[in-house]
Structure formats: C-alpha cells, structure tokens
Amino acid sequence: MTTMRFILCRRAAIAALCAFAASGGEALAQPVFGNPSPTVGSETSQKANAAADVAAYKPVEYANRGTKGPALVVIPGEIKSNNATFTQRFLPNNIADFAELELSQANFSVLERSNLGNLLQEISLAYNLGDVDKARQTMQVGKLKSTKWVVKFDILKAEQIAENKEGFDGSAIGGIIGMFGGRGGSAVGQATSSVQTREATGVWLIGMRYKIMDANTTEQVAQGYHELKMEVGAKATSVLGVSQSAKGGVGLDTMVQRLVQTTVYEIDSKYK
Image 1 (cartoon, one colour):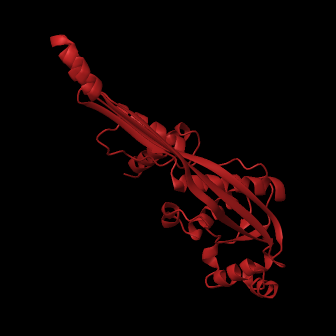
Image 2: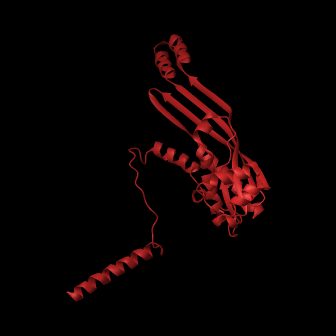
Image 3: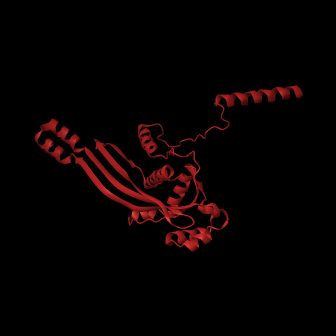
C-alpha cells in the first residue's frame, strides 16, 4: 500500500511539473471567463467586440515610472460644467478614484482617501481656501507628515460641440419609378421604396485641469489643462426588410479616465 501511494504521489508531482512547464513557468494562469451571449462568434458579435476593444482600458507606459514619486494626497476636485448629462453621471470622488489609480501606476506614493476618514473634508477645505494654518495642522497627523503634494483634478468643460445627421428615404423615388416604369418599374419602385438609411454623429469636448499644491504652504506648485474629443455615432440601413444597425463610441467614463492618464503622464514627465 505504501509503495502504491508513493507511485501515485510521484505521478501527481510529475503531472504538476509538466503543467507548470507547459504554462511557461507561470505559477498562476490568467483567469478565463465564458461568454453566454447567444450571438457569440457571429458577425455582429465580432464587430461589436472590435469596437469595444478600441474603447477598453489600456495601461499607460509612464516615462519616469522607474523613479519613485513624492508622497501625495488626491483631494476631490470640482466639476464646473453645467451639462446635465455629465453632472448626473460623475461626482468629484469618481475622478479622484481614477487619479489615485493612475498616480499609483506612475509610481507615486499615494495616500488613499479612504484611509483619511473625516480628515479628508478638513484637508479639502484647507487647500481649496488656501488656509495655511489649517493645512499645516492637518498635515501633522499620522502618515500625512510625509506628504509633499496635494493634487486635485477639475472638469472645466464637458459639452457637445457638434452634431451631424444624414439619411436616405427611398419611398419618394420608388413611387416615381413605379408610376412611369410599367410592370418592371413597379417592382423596382417597391425595392427602392424599401431602402432606408440613417446616420448620426455627435462630438463632445471634455477638458480637465490639474493642480499640484505644496502640502505645507498650500501654494500652487504646478498646473496644466488638457482637452480630449469624444465622438459617438449610430447608423442604420434597411433594404427589403433586411436591416442592419450599429452604434458606439467612447463613453464618458472612458474619456475621464483617458484625461486623467494624459494629465498624470504630464505630471510624471515634468515634476518628479
């Protein structure tokens, strides 16, 4: 029995070693997820996934990632746009979450807001008002003593600046062909009347400003501003009862994250 157990254990060890070698030496494989969609693998699925891949999150290779950045705290910024679509969707804390993620990726020492508790409101108030005494008082608590910068990200602009629509309705032309084209013309007229095409595109401009403040004096160390263009579109075609439609574009969440990545890239490149 002991010999048999030894043989089984050895076989299991050899199998595990082979699996490890086959995986290229990685102890843990990447997670794999299924797709329950009934259209998976179809043409519509491929086109939709190709569009989604363009909009998916992509890590940024920050230029000075190898250099450790100073300790900092991200405080919630301001959203100064009056666009209802944007303000209903975003709060300053959402933007600060993206900022903490990207600054950490760029190798800054980020003290997360969730660890500050009630102090976060005091810190935000002190630096927004430029209250030096209050800022120094709050920065003497615990981990905050090592903080060099206080950083905030503001949305200054979020507006749809352009929209264009066009389409074709074949009913009028089909009716004319049917009237003057005889029996054959009637069939052609019916086919032409069935043709419907519509296309619409909208373009947004979203602008973000960042401010870096000295943690001890509240003085502004640096600031910058970036705008990115967001395009959303839809098109639809119908011929003889066969229809095809598509819509997509980069969403507001993705645009805000890309703006944060753009501004953090500048901070990483210029101010480390």
